Image 1 (cartoon, chains in turn yellow, orange):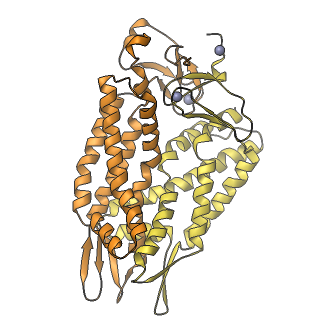
Image 2 (cartoon, each protein chain N blue to C red):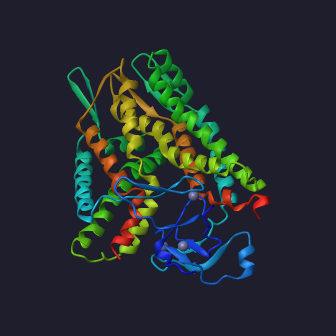
Length: 200
Length: 218
Ligand SMILES: [Zn+2]
Ligand SMILES: [Zn+2]
Ligand SMILES: [Zn+2]
């Protein structure tokens, strides 16, 4: 073994070993054997990442209070926020699903945003955040369980399902939800592990 | 020209922080053991390193069979109870697809059908295919099978759609004269199927597909 292991990259899917490639913008490296994406050019600086995380935090706060959908009937207006959707499940006969839903659309996104803010605020002052290791490990474990984009599609389908019976329409929260789910894919997604290297 | 594998070079990648670590002790016995586990931790994040996910095949089978069992009640039991002034009705997943189709909302019917029947059935078939071919040591179309695994990762949680639609409908429609919509037990089983198949996908190790070498290469 002549090579420095940190300069190597291993394919997650087929165990092939490569030298870490130098990538220009919009380039990505693919595995020769199994065609998996090995590495992507990362275009966000730490400050940009922090700015996007703050934006995501504001969108989430907005979503706590503003509804995703509205229903209007005879002058009455009913609305559904993220929290009200979870509460509706608690009241039904299947309250266990309320825990799962609360986790997938509230707890996981909130924890992702909080942990990223924690790490990136310290990095702003070129310091490693206390508990950096645990924060990063938690972020990695949370990644597959954020389901905001599925909830977004669910809201669109709920509108269609109600047409004919009730007048349902999208509210401001639906657009915030779209923005938040895109932001979280970008900032807490597959390239998260790069923070280990950027913040040694 | 194929690239070398981490196993040949005595390397392991940490599955959490993705640091490439050199394997500390390489004994010939361990080299040929089926499990390929070593008592070594990642220098950077402290996670126990392993060359392959532990007990991947048994765990994936167990989680997949559990999901398959729950998939039966999730289709048979009602997912929603709708009470209106003059009539009550309950719908199952397939019933709601048929109702939407008849109501000319065929696009939504197709989306719901894909999320609640297409995606879970695809997951069961692909998982079974991957497990059986790996257990048989099959060396054909390994690249395509790896792509199938990535498809599993991609479609993973989209089946939660039905659960979220039920939650939103129940939150919006719960008032007097217009009736109320209440989620029923079918949704619970369906949610469990989604979670179990996601866990099954996470516990499978696609590198096993590449571990059995074609005989003429060796
Ligand atoms: Zn070399
Ligand atoms: Zn590969
Ligand atoms: Zn590690």
